[in-house]
Length: 90
Picture: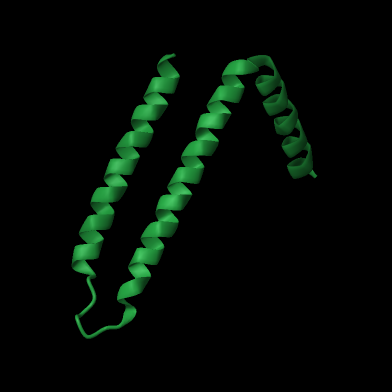
């Protein structure tokens, strides 16, 4: 499926761009040797990695669900759109 491959490629490109940006900002904003907050970035890195893993798992599950039940997915999106439209119209 072309859209699935292009979505994967776009996610990979965004990941690579984020990693490049993060490495660049860490080099610029590296703390002085006398600072004691050196354990915090490792915690943030771990949390970001965990968040990336969870998001990737959710995206994979969503892709599988849409592939298995395309009609139900479109019907659900339509129903949600109608509900949001009516709530915001008032």
